[in-house]
Length: 297
Length: 331
Picture 1 (cartoon, rainbow over the protein chains, first blue to last red):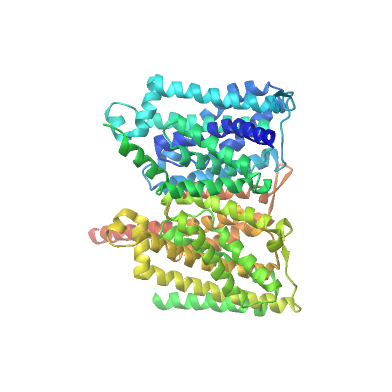
Picture 2 (picture 1 turned 90 degrees about the vertical axis):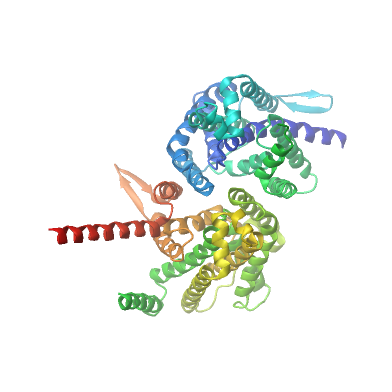
């Protein structure tokens, strides 16, 4: 029993790495632009397919593909999306950008259907089946590597956000876009970079997920829900919050297997979401206000 | 002008009533039934998504609950027609269940939560096999005179459509509707003026759920087979969002117009195939692309849909006429 529990916990922690990468993308875009990026699900799904093309089609090393090739591609995609679709509706009510990005998601899904059909795909690499044992607990090398890539990316990003001018400018815009503009930050440019970074993270998370799970053109939806759940749990600003939220959700999901059947696992993220929203009424903004309220001047 | 309008209205009405008499069991009758069904869905969604401005991505749950309520009760021996109002009521109660926590959220946050509601409900329907038959779905008994039966449902759908329009019109002109409009514009300001926003939103959701539940019930009895993939499918939620947006979100006639146009688009897409450069494409492969592109184009260029477009064209024409009149008097 204790070994079973240990196996569950280890796998939960390993999955949390991917969740965190995914959610940080959503949180970044929301934090800076106050736009909920519904095309996030599409970017996650396309990320998985691009990884499939690179790894299975072009026989590239899986980790070179997911770390070095996919993120720059999706950064460009994100910049393009921001310029073409999001910028024209920034002044409109928030529902406009939500519906617009929803339309983009539908289009992405259909494009994936046309190119890759609706068939369920998997990526098998030399690492997929490799495992070693720590005591009684077997650890899958592939999952460990995916976790490490996700974690290192987030750590580097954290450094970028706290140490560089651009990162600080992004955080300043997230806190108060008007004040940032007054301080001489080109907020339009920051928006573009943030959307690009967020999409790059989504694409990379999708590529990493594709190394672990099977995927089809619909698969982004439930991950977006999970990301949203994590963002609500952890808040949009802090890197630590997102990591913690991911861990909580992954643990809840892993432990739920003890009570409900595996097919219902996605139900957990929904329940956690609702509970989190009830505990912090008003959702994200409520959470934000609370944070701001206790922040010393 | 007014007389002409009434005449056109009566003409369309008579045509619609005559369709099953002239062409019993034809494709037009089927298309007519679908149009009425979609109008009910579109008008129902518009009560929450349009009037109150709370866009729901999970409205399919009402449709599915309505369909399953009818199927389950009918199979347990409850008279068939009695299940229709029951389906509406159960759907509305389900709305109360998830609306209570979710409607405390505002605007976009509510929308995200509704995606979760849709997913969670579909999973429940898939996994509660004793009640719903799981992924295999439920098959309903085939009636003896199928042509007579389907024609009957054509008229029933027509009546319910008229009913839903009357409800929508009543809401729009009532104090309740004004409260919803105020919430859409600015929830804080509405509350400050004494509109109990949460209560208003819940009421709108109940009403909307009731209408969509009725539509689900009709669908189950008309198709005689339901499964979670169809009646709880995300694509039905997409349809419900798309129709009012095409027509004009938050207006009375926009959702109706949008539903009519959407039924035609959907029918064409589902059946047509293109032949380009020797390749044959089935258009159905591109349906999400078309829907997504429509959504994007409408939001970018005319957020108020066809109604907004019509108003804009009307303004142009009247301005042009004025200009002409000025030129003529001057010349």
